[in-house]
Image (cartoon, rainbow, N blue to C red; front, top):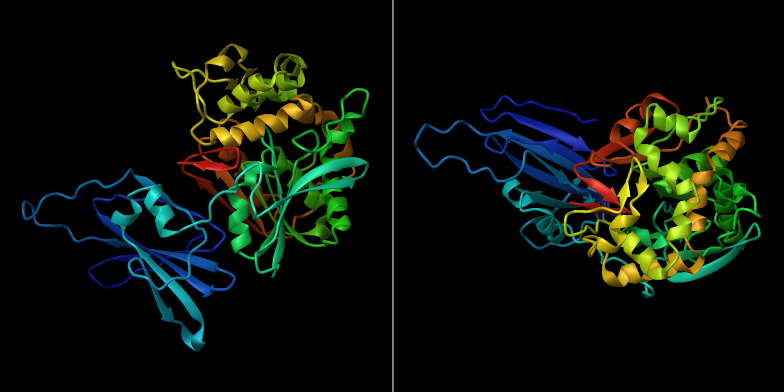
Length: 443
């Protein structure tokens, strides 16, 4: 993953070279080390960058000569790659010419600068503001009839109209397409067109009732086919495909059913799993290796849609799912048992979603109710049956990125540990230092 070099000087040097599509998470003993991070642009126009972290060991100070080193930060920090501005201001940025007149941008960050936290990192590596809902000039609400179902999706293009790639983003539960509101502006700055659909049953997309409709409308195969058909109708034949939660499972299966469609693939929290010829029910999975999936039994039971019917109840539930807590730290959800109805009325504001955003979410969820989203938890058997036609030895050959969250209580990082040893030929992965809620990284 990293290359290492050692010098002969009194200051021992180790250099870690990190590709642009990764995030570096590394532990430091700050009493002994200082750090410089260098971001180099090979092409300022595409803003494709590499990150180099140089670590130097400080010489031991004579006892009593100066005050002891002050501990500046916790034992670990995370340096998040993002959209680096092309600026010549100093500090912390300076520009220089590379060999053969290739432009580059260099940003030097000392440990003291890095340890000031995410707010300073945000100012050092500016990123565009999140999309505003329900409307924002940077995107359009669009609708398309796909395989007999009306889909709603967010559509955005770079301002200059120069489209370098198309990124399709697939949300999970309990989210909607607006869950990508932080990532879409970044992709736009990178010159990408972005399409983010509300998946079957969510938001502005149709939510067929089951029964009388077939549960296969909510299957992985149907989702993959609908993505392929939507893009065909839009005249798009090649995409970068990313997903979170259920969306992560959708994207892994899409590259198996429609590999010609996807040039690159990434998943947030959801690891790749090989199709299997043996069926394991949710109940058996919970009794065995994954008790944290007990909530899926509750979501599939039918009780939740009977109790979460009003807009206010749905709003309070979503507020709790996005980090809201009661006065005694009550939560609305347990991975092991499901929804805790008795706490829904108790939770206060969410730390990661604004009240305005929450209103939009509540409106979208209340439009068709929670039955549609919960149907995804009733598809385990039909997904297994559909996947019997897939070859479990098929390799995913396009570049793949897996992003895990170390505090995810359900999709635990260790679940992705063996991904590089199975059917992925070019997998890059990392785990954040915190956790994901929706598609927002919480620090």
